[in-house]
Image 1 (cartoon, rainbow, N blue to C red):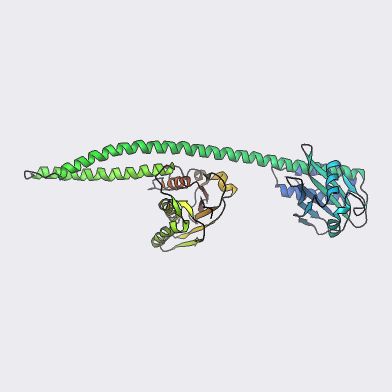
Image 2 (tube, rainbow, N blue to C red):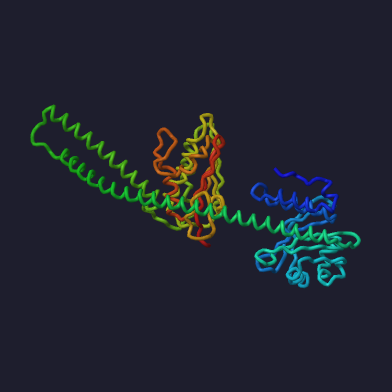
Length: 447
């Protein structure tokens, strides 16, 4: 692990700037430390080494029309600040000098033609002398590291200029490395998301195909069973013997059992097609609050004592294009799932409805079926139950996968299919032993 601070004797000795730079280079490990922490360390060390009051790191906006301070250290107050902005339209000479010079060194900032137009900023911070180093990326200036001295004007030595230039190069390297790592992580997240969606598509097509063929077989079984039932109900010309009566009773029980099994299998086909996002839907313009109102009332009636059920419903949200029955069924699935996850002593379940945009984590680790950006409503069901073990979290929406003794493995799979049919976003967060959070984002219609 890098030291938290360079040795004091190094900071005090200007002849040992190579050792200071070596320490900074070793501590600037973007993969091991947050970028903000590295930049704070660099500005503090630079201020102490060059004996200046302020060191700031500025970045251009995309159009090179402004500089924005992303990290600033004031040695007088030992405080870090950021957020100031300088506009190119108000300081053209200074911005032009950054594009042309390796260093912008002004002994008297109020007299130097390159910096005197920064008068308001200079007076605000009592700056007398500056040593600014532009940062380059692919041969183009993308920012600047400013070393600002207060009080009487002072000159900077050649070693000071070399040190400041090396600091600028180091900051540029840190920012470029951080950007590269973030792009690599984004690519990895994108590959993972694409692989997950591809797997869902393949499972969905398989489920839809199985449901279609299986339903055809059920139609054959059901039609023959109806013929048997009709033959049982046909009038008898002669009185039945006891043995024949018992035989017909047994046949009737068998046909009833077949009818029950056919109905259950047909429901299973419906669930398979819902998971595939190919179930029959009747979407119309309706508010989500209205779609789930009956679900909330029904669930409240079945909440046992010892369980707290909280709701936060924003009824003023714009309408959406919904299959109200499918959305109500999905929310009920999540509520029942939360109830079954609570320990025997009870717990808490919370249902909320609000306007919200899915964050990066939900988009990357969840399922995003949207066709583009837009306003969304968030339906969130959370509990403080047993939670889901991390290795199983990625499989909770798979069909036939369940951790319950009597579960069918289709509750969350059906929810996922419903979200898919509505072009929404579905994401699950859970910590074993602490609880779970199920989130559904549904697109809202433009008012």
